[in-house]
Length: 392
Picture 1 (cartoon, rainbow, N blue to C red):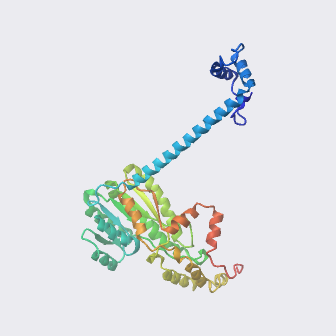
Picture 2 (tube, rainbow, N blue to C red):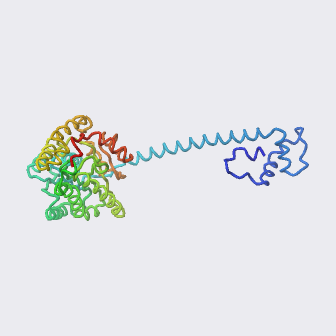
Picture 3 (tube, helix red, strand yellow):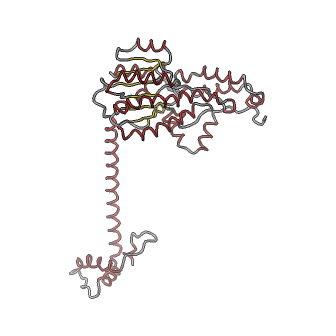
């Protein structure tokens, strides 16, 4: 029957016979008095007669037109809802905490780079900043550039006793207010070199600083952050999403990502927000190419003759030449990372993850979601071809 089949999907069973009767009862009365005889048979039979007189196409077209109109309305309603949700989401992200002048924040790694700029920035905003530095000279220099609100403390995050003493000192400073913000920024790059050049000791330093140091500082200051129902901000890296070189840096940052996620879920019940910032490649002391090259050369001198033959004498220089083509992707504006810290500290609805840097947003993070075969293809293109990999 034409009407029963109209608009029906493949495999869908036709409507029951009594449905035909209901349709007939609703349609046939409007044709009475229009040269159509009154129905002398059952409604279903009358509907068949109605269809046979050429009205099937009219019903099909009318139904199709209604369906199309309803679909357009539904599309515009969904589009409007999505636009409204986007507006509300963006508006929610802009809401800030009411007062910051009575809040204390603790930042590690303030000698140079992100930590140093963050300490100076948040001091100007009115926070009570406690800046942890590794060296006394950098601590004195930072104190000279900031207000009386900012306090500095010498801290080696790999020294458990030093961390405990510092935590007790911070507790005395903040009192009953607690610690509003903890920014775990201290980190080292370590040696970046092919894996078969390295020993386990080459992995130890970045993992001790970037991972265990971060965890130890967090555990010792966590009661103060819980008291203030404050914020914890862990500085990871795009190296925690995609391993771009051998060495301990990438494993340490991958582990930081895991610690950050578990901590975030554990602290949610206490009203503590935990965020992770993933910077791309930035021009800081951490990524100094001269220091990185010096470390590679020092390791090269102690490699076995077999490995030197496999890689070739000019391997390090060729690697440097390859890196020169990527300098345009290095970010020089450190404030991009500090802006992420600021939002995580002051927003009523901080994000769980922040990505900083054009290279991170346009290349590294998208690539981290791609299939491994594509990741390997693009990253291996940046590596130097070995002189004789079969010389094993």
